[in-house]
Image 1 (cartoon, rainbow, N blue to C red):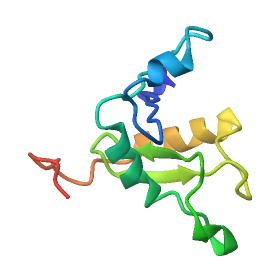
Image 2: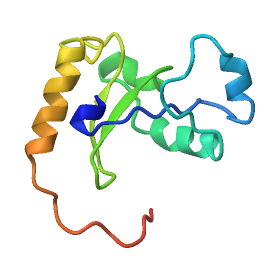
Image 3: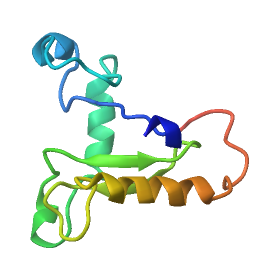
Image 4: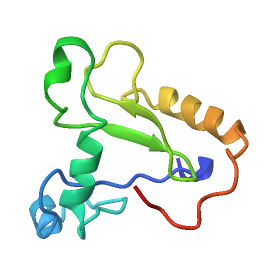
Length: 114
């Protein structure tokens, strides 16, 4: 994934203060795990992690997002969703290749605000 310019970042759903200790030393983490502000980040992404249909009532316990180089959420995967998912690495690679072909939407904002 690094060869495609992608990076995995993990955000715990709750307070990330002791997440590294809770994860343990084995297996080693091969990607960054957010600790500062994790609860606020998780709260924000929970808004985007609801399923469709009857599953929409509650946010998923696990969700993955594809964020472009300008910080825009471009895709989402919820484990167990119908259709091809990122549990198949080729599906994720195909999405990264498509995203890489797109020209930036315009200049990135100077400040990230909501």
